[in-house]
Image 1 (cartoon, rainbow, N blue to C red):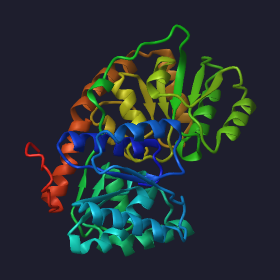
Image 2 (cartoon, rainbow, N blue to C red; image 1 turned 45 degrees about the vertical axis):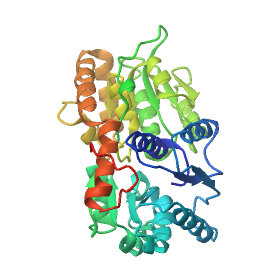
Image 3 (cartoon, rainbow, N blue to C red; image 1 turned 30 degrees about the vertical axis):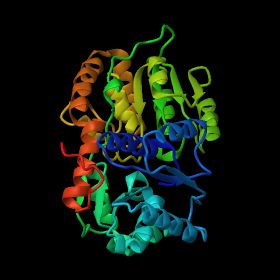
Image 4 (spheres, rainbow, N blue to C red; image 1 turned 180 degrees about the vertical axis):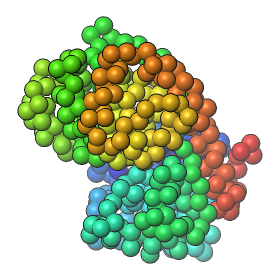
Length: 374
């Protein structure tokens, strides 16, 4: 993978731990210029379970001449370690893995690719989208297996890039057992909280407009937790909408901490794949108000939670008002959703399915302590 941040890093982190527990020799390669203190600590801890080490290399976020040397260095590492599977995560990580895998053909290394959310959100009419999809088609012959974290991502990939000619499987992200609990509520808790990146795709502006729209009927308070490129714009928008004393921007903090500070979690996303924040909120038995973007309906399943159309300010305002008028149905749905998520979205299940995909679908050699109980 490239940047050790966000949901992608969360997935790789949990997958590496799980595979190591199953007896596999695991290594991680990622960017040395991205991340932060929390990422550095997490990667340092991973070194204890990664027998093949944690290697950090400078990686450019966009296509760059340095990419040539990066993938060759990855191939060199793979050759020296005689790896069975090279698993690329994200668009950049997937490109590195497949180009490096081409040089490892004689070693019979299998290359698996998980696009995650970034690729499927490019517009097919944009220059960057056309370039990325063309590049994906060029790399397709070098791919031995594709894993998607949602049915939405798999279907979107087939629509934008083409139907996979290699084995492909949908494997949901998961949480660890200790992440399932009933969240407490602080004495000064507000009504709503948003947790995530502050950028257009996440729909925070829609949330602010919906919040402003229903203020006359029932004044509500909210906390915005996170950071991102649109932070200044969103703060200005909150002031223009008259929400300066109703909305607090709290910066980045753990989701568990944020949940304590509000009665309901709002996920107003315009675009998503399979957002961890929805799974985390459900595991904490938090009432949620969410859009139907991407794979969110796959998380809620058959639970009768009314999802809001992405970008619909009026519909979101209606849901906010409904919660303020009577939170009972939302609390009941939270209990049901927690049980559903516990049954479907677990790191144990995720890890076992990924390893099974390596062995059964891709046919990768597993001479290093294959997990016999998968």
